[in-house]
Amino acid sequence: MDPQQIVFLAILGAALALFVSGRMRVDLVAMLALLALAFTGVLDARQVLAGFSSEPAIIVVSVFVLSAGLSATGITDRIGAAIGRAAGGSEWRTIAVVMPATAALAAFSHHVMVTAMMLPILMRLARERQLAASRLLMPMSLAASLGTTLTLFSAPAFLLASDLLQRAGGEGLDILAVTPIGAVLVVLGTVYMLLARWLVPRRQGEAPQGDYMRLERYYTELLVEEGSPWVGRTRREFDEAFSERLQVVDWLRYGMRRRRQSGDSPLAAGDVLLVRASPDEIASIKDEPGLALHAVAKYGDSPRQGGQAELLGDEQLVQAVVAPHSEFIGRSVADIDFLRTLGVVVVGLWRREGWLHGELSEMRLEEGDLLVLWGREADIRPLSSHHGFMMLMPFQGRGQARRRAPVALAIMAATVAAAATGLLAPQVAFLAGAVAMVLCRCVPVEEAYRQVDVRIYVMIAGVIPLGIAMERTGTAQAVADLLMAHAAQWPVFGLLLVMFWTAALLTQILSDAATTVLLAPIALAVAEALGLPPAPFVVCTAMGAVASFLTPIGHHGNLLILNPGRYTFGDFLKVGVPLTLLIGLASAWMARALWLGGPLLPSLP
Image 1 (cartoon, rainbow, N blue to C red):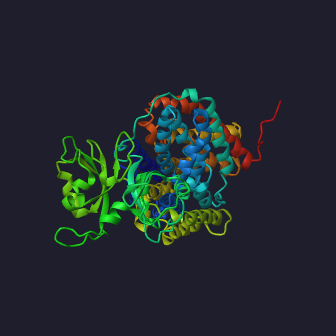
Image 2 (cartoon, one colour):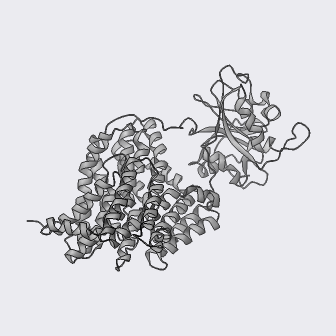
Image 3 (cartoon, rainbow, N blue to C red):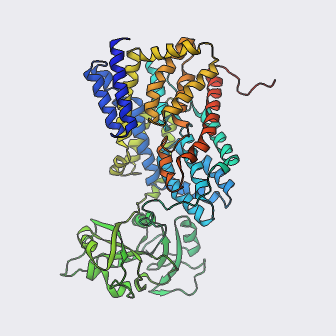
């Protein structure tokens, strides 16, 4: 064995041991492996740093920003809510609707973000319709994983596979090259979960961590401002426009409850609407033309003690729970005068039971009430030690620029179209789309940076040199020769299955990107030994890294649903082993049909 191969295998073995042990972050391990390849002379400086400017790394970062734009404009939440409404009340219909829709979302976004978005929607759906949460969450997570097989840019593994094919002197994969296989896998997965859902345990879900801190509906008051576009329009029009976002509970005019609240009655300037709204909606009201949080509009600029006006600008929203035996219990919000005594304004209230009617300031507080407070950081900080509150928590609402949703959709569509048609190189098209999201103010630049998972970018940049080293040292060819010595007489379909299942098993301990980088050069060498096009072998390897559904640690999305669904390790094996066998057969069959001229349908005897 060549000395460089020995050095490379030692570095690879150490990296694999660190990856599996979990003692270090995967991105740090990737950087250590990169440096080891440089210090030992296995690769030169240009080869070692090639990953940072590679097409996969640039596209992955850009996809994070594009996903942030879709989320910040409320598109993903609205789609998720629409999926929940279309799911109906039966288990089979919910699965039949949720899986294809989730897969479609994951094809153009990050699958972990899609899983996190769908998790609370399905948990609420399960509670409201008395369905077992465990029967819904696993199919949803599976669909998010399978959705990443629909487009090249939705999974780093496919981007790395395309990059390898280009470096080998061939053509890379276009962004829809894997779509036929992915479509078959989504249909297969949906049918499998519908027919074999009895394999999934029937358990009621647990509330995700932090669920108490992010409640679904608060009571708050909206003021119809002077010159508002809603002045003169009817209550029915308002309800229709905001039906997906909030629920009007009461309607006040001149501080008094309107007795006749028909849908044809027009709104007037100064009207106050008591509504139930999500945290995101409360945080987004400031961007809604002609509407304002009533308490902020009424008290936000009122004189403070000492005659100085309250300056809004560094204000924030927090939540405070009324403590047992608090001095606030039994007193109304107006009696307490939060602005004068504590320097904050009450803009929302959550109560465990019962509906609220009338003006928020007249509500008498009870033990356990959760207040949404608006104020400056300097005034809010002392509240954490106030004996009247049991705890002070961040308000979990995110403001959404809903008016820019059409722009965000147009940018995403243009990005995909430019890359798919070859008008722009894929990495340029996605980078341009990410920049456009920021320039068009679909997502603030600070939020765009926060949404980029730097660990994934660094890991991809770090593992690409491992793949280069596997090729340059001849290690990939040596492994391929060993494989061909034992499997030279196997049919091509069998070899494709071998590559899929090797990747499927290895990705349970490594990421899909690392698995593809290590195995794709071997797949390439096998194809060359057979004198066949390398694309089907490399794609099957990437499919195995992405689409295997064997354990909860194989994909980050599975970890998100593990506790809420009360799943065990064995639950994933019971469902995942037969499914992954079917996915492997379908992937190998479709890859052979697409690139090697094999039959698309099985021949009848």
